Every structure is written in structure tokens, then in C-alpha cells.
Image 1 (cartoon, rainbow, N blue to C red):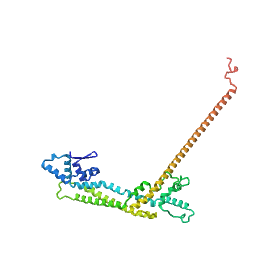
Image 2: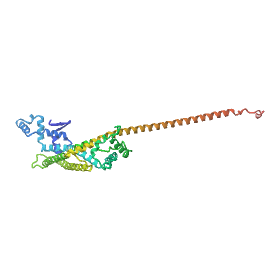
Image 3: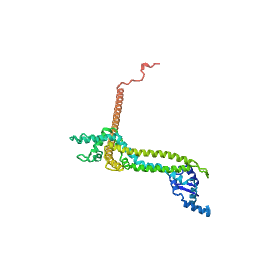
Image 4: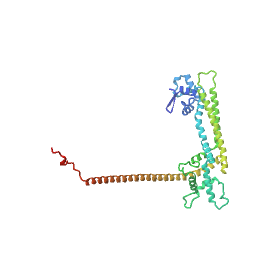
Amino acid sequence: MRNLKVDGKRLDAEAIKQALYDGNTGTLTAEIVNRLDEMKATSEELTSIRNIIRQNSNDVLDTPERLLLDLASITHFESRVACLKVLHSFEERLSILSTPIVALQEVLERLSTSESVKRIFGIILSYGNYMNGGNRTREQADGFQIDLLTSLKNCKSKNQQVTLLHLVIQTYIEKFERDTFPDCAFPVPETAMLKEAGNAEPDSTLAELKETGNLLKKISDMAAVISRPEKEPSEHVSTGFDQRMAEFLQLATTKLEDKISQVNGCKDKFREVTVLLQWQAKGKNEVEQIKEFMQIWIVFSTDFSAIWKDLKMKRISENQAAKRKMQHAVQLKQQQSVHVGEATDFRLRMSELKRKKESKASMAESPSRSTTPSFHDMSTG
């Protein structure tokens, strides 16, 4: 039987042909399309197969050769497969290219607009001015170099147990999250997102997106040829493929343009944020500068997270201890209430017994009244 089996799904040549004409991506999954692309026959192979048929008969062909011949007979087989291959891989390709860019965009947006980041900066500045008291030039600073963020943990107390970063975090919690900690949001960008953002290479991504655009143009030209009516069609061909590709190309082109705009926006935003924070890069190109900038924040966020988690666990333990103490107090109060009730019941029972005892004693002391009739009451007959 002339068929193709992938993932337990068996398709014969006729089913493949119809699915290609319809543009049916439900039947022709990404794996099946890739298999079709791998097994397409070369012109030499087709010539050899046809020579065998001409010299002998179709019956002498093995199943693989028959399938190759059947697939080659499908109108624009290779172009259809190429188009569907791009259709299946486009979203994944775009996602891989844009993941670091999306992370960079989110980090830059948060650093420039987050209220919690501004508050952390304010606390650091306040402690810095306090520690520089007596130095008129430094105690009135209205800002600091963000490179300082990586050294906050190195400024320690006399017992070496508490760092300046501890004080900054504790002050933030006490001042802004007293009632919500430990359930409040982490106030600075997460380390994982910062690392992803550090992998961003905007110019390389733009080049890859341009290449993707060229690929879309290539399959658009293929689709146009496929949809062109033949002068003498050998068979009726469904227009489902044409409609499917037209919809895909329109949507893909829009998404591609949006991604290009997003990357260019990130490039502008990065320059804007570095100016806002008055940060001077040492790297010569944009990729090096992004990695350098993110590394500062990766170190700070990692240090911040370690202390934040310790304080969080401590607060959770304190809350649990307070809850247990409260539950114990409630249970004790309930037990005391039960004891008081039992004592009251006992006193009432004793009082009732005493009353009954006194009543019986009183009845025993009073003279008995006879019920026998007197002689003068009896008739003499």
C-alpha cells in the first residue's frame, strides 16, 4: 500500500494529495510536512523510476518508489510543501527570536516606571547621605551611580551579620509593605528575567527578522504561482490552499512588522533608561552594553532575593507561631468556659438536693393527722 506513517497516523498518497490541495494543516502536521520535504524525489530519481516503468511495468516498483512517483504527480508538490513548512514553523521562529527582546522590554519598562524600584532607590540614597554625614559634598547627594548596587552587601555591621542591603530591604518592608509582607510582590526585576534580557541582541534579531521577511516573500511568490490557473488543467484543484496561504501571509506580515517595531523600540528605550540612570557603559557596542547593564542588576537582584526570602521565611514562621498562640488561647478560654459551666451546674444540683432534704425533714417533724372516724360520728343503729 502506498502510504506514509508518522506518529501512528497513516496517510496514503491520495489523502496527502487532497490535504495539500486544501491546505489542511490539521492533517498535514509539522512532522508530516517535514517528512514530505525530506522524501521528495530528485529529477534523476524520477527519471530512473519512469524508465523502469517504461521498460517493464508499474508492478515491479517497490512501495517507496510508487509513493515518490505519486507525490511527484501532485501539482506544485514541492512548492506546496515549502509553503506549509514555513507556515508551521513561523510562530516558533518568531517566538525564539523575540523572547530576549520581550524580556529586555519588560525590564526596561519596570526600571523606568516601577514605584517600588523608585522607593528602593530613595532608601539607598537616604542611607548613603546619612552615612556620609559630615561631608557637605556627599551628604546632600541627589543620586548615585547604579554600579553601587552590587556593593551594598559588602557594607556590613560590626558583627558582620547585617549588611546595608539588609537595612534597605527591612526599611522598604516596614515603610511600604508592613501589612502585606510576605504576600507582596518582589519589588525589583527577577533574576531570571534579567538574565534573559541580557541575552538580547537587537541588531542580530533585526537581521533575522529581515531574513524571515525574505522567506515570507519567497513563499508568497510560490503561492501566487500555485494559485495561477493553468491553461489546460488536468484535474480540478481545490482553492483551499490559496485561501489558507493568503490568510497566513497577511497575519504573518503584520506580526513580523510588529516585532521589528518592538526591537527598534527596545533599542530606543535602552538608551533612554541609561540616560535616566546616568549610567556610563564601558562596552563599545550595544550587545556588550546590554550585557554589562543587566549584569549589575543580576547581581543586585540575586543578593536582594536571598535576603528577601530569608525575611519572608522568618515572617511566615512568626505568623504561624502567632496563629498557634492565638489558637491555644482560644482553646484555653473554651476549656475555662466549660469548667465554669460545670461548676455552676454542680452548685445548682447541690442546692436542689439541699432544698429537697430540708423539705423532707420539715414534713417528718409536723404531727400526723389520723384518718380513723370518732365514736360519736358512728350511728348507734
